Length: 354
Image (cartoon, rainbow, N blue to C red; front, side, top):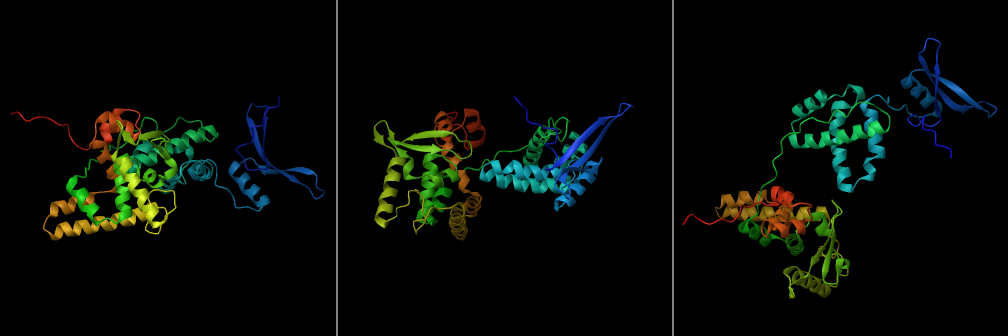
């Protein structure tokens, strides 16, 4: 069985590497362009022994812009952006591109071999956005893992062992007063989204994609986009109709009366699927109206609480208001500790001393 030649896989197309051991024991390395002469016969055109200059000559022969030197971080960034990021989920792609933009500012022209744990730690300490710095270092770490696979470095990953900035989980809890204030100002499609998010405990993106096709044999089928975890939410509780089932039934009746045939449950007034931006616009409008109303009535504390309320806080609100084991399974967590640490936003119920 013939094995695929991987000697030149780190080089551009039609660039070859030749090595020769000299009499003094040193290894000579030269680069060539696999081209053609005037008669159309194969001809190896010398490009020199310096890899960066050889790439410039290759680009001239190929009539292309010279690639960035492979020993620089900028070359790794370009290749990672082209080869790796497109294979990730859309939201992760967006986040990675933002993180990559910050990493380029600091490391684009730095040699790959110059990145040490001390350099990474310095980046962590000087970056003003501390939480974002953690995400950027995590991306940088994965890049170095891939760089080792590509043969761009043999160094140990410089991000390993570098402490991350301490992160405090968001602990905002939307109480009844805040919820009711925003809900009262919401248009119908936003109320529907809020209800479905609370009753299912799912992420905003998963709420918006829920459709009638997900209803099957007494269950609402959920495929979580972030973790790919699959759930079946019962529509009956011990033989009785659940609030979720009643809500979906009411929603479908309203859609039928309006002649809306879109299978997606959450739609706008025109019957179109609600997008993330539509949801954001309606949420911001309802929240601001509720906050202004509370402030006008003199309740500044409520107004401040309303302005902190984000749609994503509905998921932890749902997790906080049911039993821990139930919440953990509904949210699709692998352990109850994740639910308890990140999503439970209210304290344990205790009795007074007397």
